[in-house]
Length: 196
Image (cartoon, rainbow, N blue to C red; front, side, top):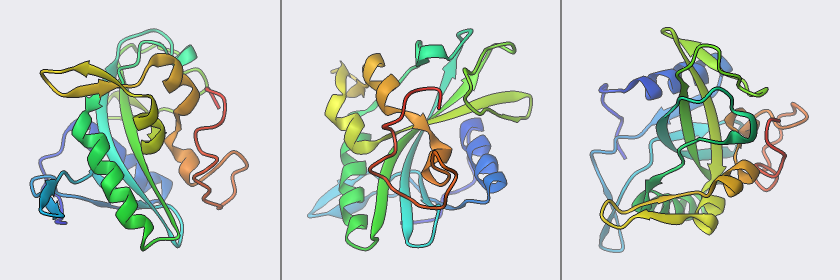
């Protein structure tokens, strides 16, 4: 894997600024190079995050715009991704699990909130450059288990709204947790009710 060049979009810039403010170590991954597993090229993920010693989180970051008035019930959120993003992330997760005792893979949706007065329903938002973002994550296994085909032509899939409400969680829970401890327990992430 290679370091990622500087051509970042606003979602990536906001995500990285937010991680730095949270004091979370991370590394960007260059997606212009694909690795080969078993003779086939596999898409790389976006970020490798180290929330705690001995733990690592593989992140596929997706920037989406939210134009609604409220995040209550997490309705109106775009959750589509390319199908090969999910498959590749699963391959990477299995490989990292061989080296790290606590490894996880998540898809993080960076939602840019368009309406100034939009209600975030208790979710933490991050403001930078006159824009506001909310970062919601879903475990790769959970997404893959419930994903539905969105477009055959574009090879995209999406997570049904009801499943996303149940399985998504504020990304900071990966290192904070419900009780604000430093224990990283991937099995409990995403099992809490929406809105924290």
